[in-house]
Image (cartoon, rainbow, N blue to C red; front, side, top):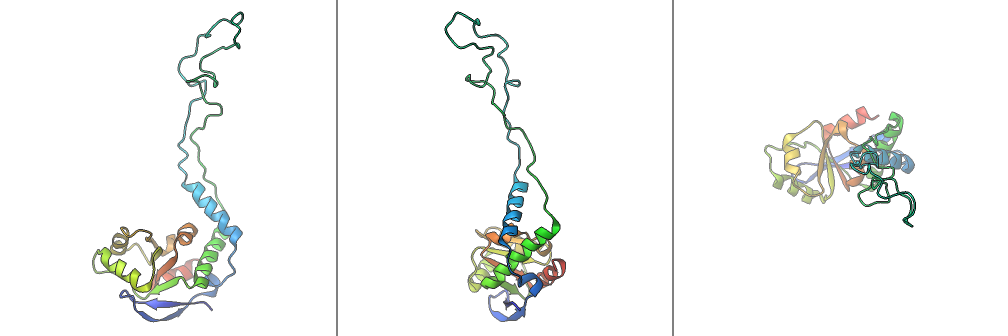
Length: 206
């Protein structure tokens, strides 16, 4: 059964905790993780790019010169694609890149990255991730004490003090337990989880 060290907010180790085999102890499936990351990035695309086709470019209604006798190639409009200021062939138009994956696929990918983090020893549990005030220095001191740099801090619910204290630290992100995703976990080197959030993860993603 995988284990993780438990720390307090002073950065001192206060114990050890067993992690769920079903969540943190499976064989990671790289193919599924790749599919889910690709899906996440596609769903993040805005798809707002747009260009004008020759039908949409203003002007070009008059034939630039007569059909025959000039020695040049015949032309019907100065807004054809080969002309400067002409329309774009197969112009990109606003579209959605969003597509869906099966729930079981996304669940397997999440378990895979969590298991990989646990196997690397990069899952850290905090017995009580609460802060009395918004202070970046407190979170920075904690991260320094546990040797974490690029980390994802997972709280039980949205914790304003933790979110605001961590948001100015480069490479550090926060997330409620129910909203963790494969991409954010992969980006982070360490996964720092509140003890209450760990219980939520093991319950929700079982």
